[in-house]
Amino acid sequence: MNAKIEIKLALILISLVSSYCSFSQNELENELFDSVINKKAKAYKSNVFFYKSASFFLNKKWDSTLVYTMKQLNDPQNSSEVKDYSHYLRGYSFKQKKLFEEAQKEFKLISTEFGFYYIIKMRLGEIALELQQFKKAITYYEELISLSDNNYKYFKKSTVNHNLGLCHLHLGEFKKAEPYLIENVKIEEQKKDTIKLIHAYGNLANLYYEQYQDDLAIPYFEKAYLLSKKSKDIKTKHNSALNMAVVEENRKNFQKALAYRKEYEQWKDSLNDQNKIYEVAKLEREFAVKAKQKEVSLLQAENKAKVVERNGLFYSVMVLLLLLGVTMYFYKEKIKTNKIIVSQKEDLNTLNATKDKLFSIVSHDLRSSVNALKTSNTKLINHLEAKNLDQLDHLLHDNSAIVNGAYNLLDNLLHWALLQTKQSYFEIISIRLFFIVEQMAYNYKPLMLEKNIQFENRVSKNDVVFADQESLKIVLRNLLDNAIKFSNTNGIIKIYTINTNNTYCDLVVEDSGLGMSETVRLELLKDTALLSKKEHEGIIGTGLGLQLCKSLIKKNNGRFSIESELGKGTKMIVSLPKTI
Image (cartoon, rainbow, N blue to C red; front, side, top):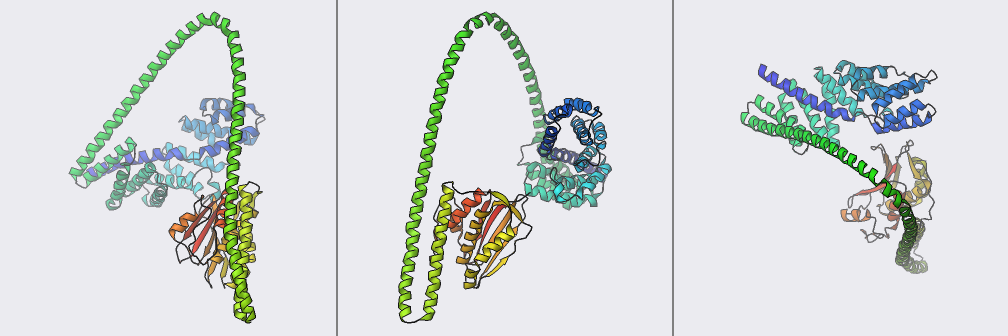
């Protein structure tokens, strides 16, 4: 038993150290906060020392940052904000130089009124982890775990959860560590980052293994080992093989343990070889630098000898350069003119293609609509003479549907032509989706009443997106028109939003109608096809409206997708950027 305990402890130390080191590389979204530092430096550009220290900080020159922040802090006219930012730059620079105690002192000098004080807590938590002050780290991270989601812009909540789990694991508080480490595994499985997932499995495996819950621990060790096979990181392969060797030795599977030990030794040799290669490469670089220095010295001597000759050729070269410059100027002007001509030709070809498509649609679909109206009117005259009121009512409704379809076609053609010829006007503004949906639905209530369709607007009044209002109305109108057209009598149409993405809001138009096959669904999502093949021959449609929708959604920086199954209805999903 004592031998097993010693082996397990060794195994735990190996995995915990490797997992901690890998995770600390991504504590904060540094680039985002660097932009804050950059803006603040520009705002205080008159404070020369602060501006210079911020510039050195952004270029990762830590020593220069420390020098100029000290000069700034010695200025008696400093504002409290400049002081706080100066202490932050110093604390971060000390942290990067591994001077953790000095970094702690600087971070603790920052006032609680600092606009990003929660980031200071994160930094102090990182330093406490580096110094293995786990209880102190927990106090910092527990303050961060209760923050609202809006504050997790510059670091991730999953980072806080993971570090809390590690701290509790180091302290032997297994029950407290378990939920954090399980959550970390779930997150990394979703992200599919191989290296991080291997470490996440290792952390959870160690948690169970230290408690002698082998049945729970070993599957995670095995997952980590199998996943390391896909990794190119030799150190990860090395540690995973060692872990499995120790596990199999504890299980008395000595043959397997020996195989893992051999694999571990192979990776160990690879690591040693890699280190040797790095050393040789370093020596080669040093030798190359020395050789280059000698070469530079020789060239300097040669240059001094050629100074006189160079001065004699100087004026000749200047004349040649002037002639070359004039020649290049006229050549570039000619190239520029040719590019303009080619671009104009391509634009003209595009416009001609657009014209051909428009003529094709007009000749085909308006002819179909007029022919249908002509046939219906002939029947109308016959039934009028026979005074067949039921048939008259039915034909009049059919005529109304045909005329409405032709009108929508012409309206779509107009907007599509304007879009293709870049004549449409766009103004991206903040829009509340609920009221736009209400307005569009109100215009289509008569058509829905004719088919006894139940309509539900489930869009939240709080959902706001960035879009052009008029083009969004055209998109909603076409999607509602399609939903009504392909819905059965007594059907249901629902419009609602889905907010599972931080960047986009999904607006869903769902009907319980005819649906479509997978082939037709994929065909409709293509950008190249103007006209789509009809799934239902009895329903008039060209597919132009849907193509117009896709073009307008793309111009609004949005995305479009379709979910449907033949006979089970359709979901048209419009994803638009959220208002921040």
